[in-house]
Image (tube, rainbow over all chains, first blue to last red):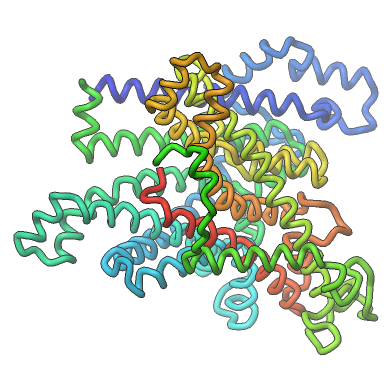
Length: 309
Length: 283
């Protein structure tokens, strides 16, 4: 188990290094001159040259990359060209709002998706299964920014139950969380249905059923344990993905989170901030991957044992 | 899966659609018809002011069935023409995605070893990068145009397809008919083109159809962030973005283009999941 953990950590670290290299390359493909971005379009050549020296832009690319990785390892992601603030600090100041939104949405989508998947499996190939399949396909087909806009019009404008954006109280949280959750709920219900139906056909469940256990008891006590594993993987990765992938929802609801920070950064071609947010979200995905892998090994002895062999 | 032989190809195709495929196919077909015949179906020019609105969007009426926008343009005509851009981008972006994903997957699965290791680690790295954020950054740099959007969507969405195709190609390479062909001296290019590729084709088709719903949503999302096909070309995502300014007074501006996106995405999803139900298990 210990060797397995170490191997996973090393692997995750290697992936992150690759990610940083790709973001670095992308940043250098960008034709905008960072020195101009810092000093403004009207700066004279001497000022630009001194800024280039100051930012280390006159060094060879591999030196710049080495320096970037070294600083990133020490938690220094550089300074934003436009906001003139520390990128790492900016990201951390915006992370809580996004984390709250992502966590609420995740809980909501699981609370909706898991019962839907179980119900569909219980009525496999009968009317409720087909209806639930259609509902979940409908849910994954809704454009998230449109759903948010509609919820805002109905819930905020006509019913006046919720504020029209921003993040002031728990009330502001509800509409964006629903917006994010519905699509994933449809997706999770399909994944769970597939795995649960598979598990219900396994020998151990049929044995339990043969010994007189009711369908619901067999599902809850025996099949669910195995069917939940792939769902945990997905949810873990999605949660990390949500933290960065909320750009559209945050834009609709004017949510003061990471998504909007990234959006602004892209629009202003604020390269350190773009690189920082991309790297941060990649790090979250890698960490989530690691946690999921370890959780898997802990929950499913077969993985632990096969890794040891 | 039984390896495809000439004989099977010659057999007349018996096309019996299950209900999901039938509904999905009908929806996709209707979209195609709307896109192709847009100039005949649209009641007005989508880019010109056809109503005197003086900056105020007009609600749906008998003359303008879905209302007009702030510039006096007919919403229905814009949605009809929008189908052209959305379908073109959705399908063409999927084609770019497929070219990248299928090549990487086939090469990785067929050759294995160090090539496979390198390509799959590269895929792992790409999977950690946030797709929308990456697409936003690329488009912002390349300047939004129909070509840059196609390319960017392809560049950020090939990973899943590469993985699936690799897994399929890997099992195919170990099958007897491939080994036999290899023993007869067939070069790798022929093995891939004539033996592996045709047998991986069904899953590629399914992934492509399902993938179009993804590229449609990504394109709409980029348009909503003003990073889509630039105006005056009507695009559903941009229509919703423009409507957000008027959502207090003119909610119909946001509602109808969204329904169009939903319809298109649902159509491809139904078709794709219908295909999936044919196969015993999606690998």
